Amino acid sequence: MPPVTDFRISYGTEVADALHDGRPVVALESTIVSHGLPRPENLRVAREIEQAVRDAGAVPATIGMIGGQLVVGLDDAQLTRLATVDGVTKLSVRDLAVAAATGADGATTVAATSAVAAAAGIGVFATGGLGGVHREAAHTFDESADLITLARTPIAVVCAGVKSILDVGATLERLETLGVAVVGYRTHRFPGFYLTDGGFDLDWSVESAEQVAAVLAARDRHAVHAGGLIVANPLPVDEQLDPELHDRTLAEGLALLERDGVTGKAVTPYLLAHFHSATEGASLAVNVRIILRNADLAARIAVAATRANA
Ligand code: PSU
Ligand code: MN
Image (cartoon, rainbow, N blue to C red; front, side, top):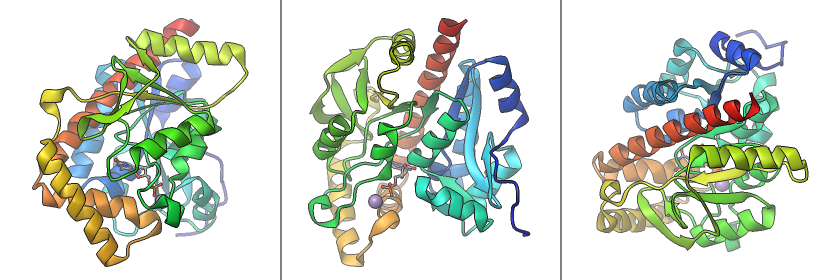
């Protein structure tokens, strides 16, 4: 592939039209597709997420890099490429320019997707779980760039909290330090992704998509701190992963991580893959449910935010 010479963001036509017309758009990440979900379900799920956004009245903008070109609103062929081709690179914010200049295919993490979405004028983003502070971070310094990027990026991220593969308490402490707002959606407990309750209280709870839109409007009106907002959307208790299976799988996964000496950006995909294989699909089904619920809520927030601006 020849080197890319146009480093501007390119837009899918539907997304470009929606942004131009001021219609609701929801950003979606591609790392969950390339590195977070197993093949071949990943492509089907990627399409279902987009459909969930549409069903709730917004336009999906899945973000990724194709041959060095940063794309907001991947088309189906591009989405298929990131879901099925070997050698797709996991891109955090720091990687974007290097990957562009070298013509890489890449999937954007929460950090990279947030930064690109905000640059594109998209204010709402749906994902499954955020990156955070890893359990051995006191020694390894392994803290996801998702956190610091959200500190400086004006975007609302709808997620189901963070997975307990992380140090959940430390992650919440870092979000406080970094100035990232966290609100529970109809809950005062921070969700633990597969589990409804991640074990920690939240200061704030919102009751509706309209209320989240009001938070975003207040942030913009004040123009004091243009940071991120995490909207933590828990699974209903009767849909969570069996807690006993969850705890066993987590303990095994952490032991394997140690045994295999996995470090750096490989850590999160390694643990996710372990969950998917060790629970024989149970965690995948829960994961898909989480993402679809988050896509729906994010779209309703985007719709409410558009109405509030009208
Ligand atoms: N957590 C999940 N599923 C995921 C990820 C995190 O439950 O797919 C992905 C997201 O793209 C997130 C990234 O931004 O992993 C974080 O990776 P790291 O820990 O290397 O920053
Ligand atoms: Mn890391």
